[in-house]
Amino acid sequence: MTSTVTVFAHAKLNLGLRVLGCRSDGYHRLESVFVPIALADSLEIEFGDLGPVAGSPAVEIGFEIESDPGLPGAGAVGPPERNLAVRAARSFCGEAGLSGRLQLRLSKRIPVGAGLGGGSSDAGTVLRALDARFPGCVAAERLLGLAVALGADVPFFLRATPSRVGGIGEEISPLTGLRPLSLLLVNPGVSLSTADVFSAFDRAQSALTLGPSRSTMRALEGPGAAPRSEDSLVTAFNSALSSRANSERSKASSAMTISNLLTNDLEPFATFLCPQVSELQEQIRRLGAHNTAMSGSGATVYGVFPDDETARDALERAEFKAPIWACATRSLGEPKQ
Image (tube, rainbow, N blue to C red; front, side, top):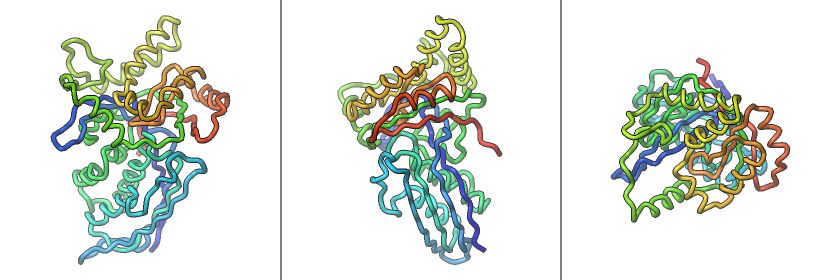
């Protein structure tokens, strides 16, 4: 019997990003705080006659995609077999021994190549939906392996809860109690290649030696400090956010703390490739953002506002013109079980 489900693939935001070094296989070791945000792609999955078989599995995957008008990077979406959602479906079905037809209908709302994890979220959401449909067919450890093979950000989207993420994306420590953020996202209408940004980073480091790997976010360390726990990280964010409502001195102190927490090591190199990264942050600050930063490898930047209404008001006052894309949104907490 054919059945269809509609699921939402939420974007993510990086609250700070540290590059800790490069592994022998060329992958970079990172540390960041990932938070899911309300902005999401919509994915309709029609399972058709898909199911386990005793013999050699053969899966037919249909794929349809539509994008919001003017969405950055929409024209760069490649053929179906290169799409991460299709690749995720094929890898799960192959691992689970499933045969039959599966239809994916993707409505893109997240800019492509924007540092928001749109394609990775689509892939993780497909893996999650198939795992829910065929529980036990793929062991949890193997599901994580499939996610890692698809891309560094995909493992986070298997659960999509606020987390500290390390390694090449496979080290995930959930953060409980992180306060929600009211946000304004702005993209200059440019898709930045993650590979290009990291190449620029590597070229800059070629004549230098990175310092010792540091196991927590920069602002949470002092001389000889031990690695902070996830609870300490949440406390640091929440304390900085809550102090904004107090005295002017506290506001200035919290702004500095949040700015340090949001530091992104890739930002100078993304800005070199796309100067609008810096220009748009200045514009967002003039609109009243407490702090601004870049997400992932860019080129999307964001501002943190006191509340959702203020963020929406800033969006209206900005009157951004195409090809600039902008969205007022908020961060999300732990998903409902």
